[in-house]
Amino acid sequence: MLKFEPFSLDGLVRIQPYLSRGAQLCSDLTAGSLLMWQEGTDMQFCVWNDTFSVRQDVGEQPAFSWPIGADPDGMIDELLAYTRENRLAMRFFAIDENLLERIGKDPRLQPFKYAFDRRWSDYLYSFETAGTFAGRKFSGQRNHVNRFRKLYGEPEIRFLRPEDRPALDRMVSLYERDHLDRFELEKLEFSGTKRLIDAYEKLGLYAACLAVGGEIAAFSIGEVIHDTLVIHVEKALLKYDGAYPTMYSGFVRLVGEKLGYPLKLVNREDDSGNPGIRISKQQYHPVGMVNKYLVHVHTPAARLSGIPVLPAGDVVLTAMRETDKDAYLALNTDIENNRLWGYDYREDLMLTGPVNGDLFYESVQYDMAAGDSVNFAVRLSEDGEMIGEGILWQFASDGTAEIGLRLMPQYHGKGYGRTAFGAIADFAERELGLKCLARCFLENTPSYHMITESGFRVTGEDDRFYYFSRT
Image 1 (spheres, rainbow, N blue to C red):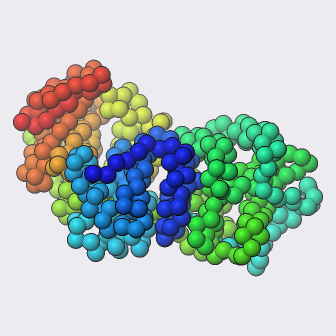
Image 2 (tube, rainbow, N blue to C red):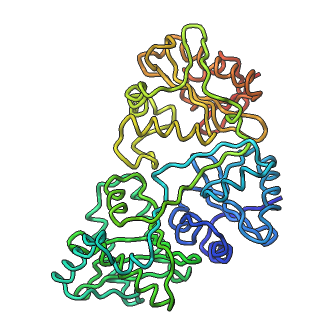
Image 3 (cartoon, rainbow, N blue to C red):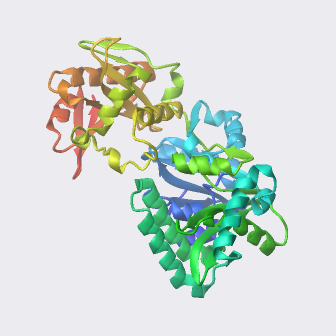
């Protein structure tokens, strides 16, 4: 049986040789990225038979990286056994197009569903043109660099030295002050940046700065994987006009000079759905994108050709429609109503753009496309307005799945929840052959009654939840 060990910096150093052997272009499976984004993911490492895989939480459930090393095929068998033994779904994260094709040809991994979110697609650039900004289409970038040169003199771009640490800390503090109003994901990224500053030397990464008058105006940290420079961090102070393109181009040239030979590509990672960052990265003329797929193997959702219509007493369950976007926005942003659902949109790391109906609706479509959930809109008639949401999710290898349901406050206490909850359980058992589970907060008395009156019994409790199973 595979044994995954909790994340540690020493563990990351040990598995670095495996990361350098991977053939994927995506940034997720690099030392810098794993260090930056391990917070809150329960990241773990496993080496088996000279083959490596990462386990981490993706969307509240564990997922695995595709095995890298001497025996990836054998490790797939071991991962299948591991997920069965631990009652986990078999899910893969950071899967590129080549691996997706490979999964599609592997009979052990059928059926499966998959999806990618454009927000997390990596931008690829030509290493040569990134270092020179040659050509008419880069005239804007050249103008910014020339403006920097005119205002502050010839750019001093060099690798960071130990004696630069006080100046770097001052720069980071100033940067943080200039970016106080940030999404939760941006705060997490900044926390990861600080960890990377402390650890880049131990990991053998490249770190360089743009110095102006003894102070640091910008800095970058990256690493080389095969023929690609992956840039994990690009930070510049707003007061230095033109610092970003000057640092970017100079960093690429500096790494090339250090290596003594040119690379092929620069990976500047994703834009996280931030409109400003997206526009900026597009203006640097990417030569390609790396879409990173989430793959759910053996998901019960793969048995469905679509979301069925389920009439049940006073309610009807249907697929969610584009016309439901406003209602779904209201459902997701009602803080008090979601308190006992365990959700607060203000703390959702995946909300990286404007908070509107499109964002929540597209999130549901992604989850369903990836096979992670089956979502229903609850209505009083088939053509009626959406009054709530039912979800079938947390599919496990032992044939269990969890049901959740929430209604808008004005529809509480009318029996609609109990009817809809029972209808989803009946559908899951009858059509998908699943054993249904549920949970609710200890203080959520209405949900307790809704669940038990739908044929579920209490199977246990902890300091937060009651747990239920359908009898």
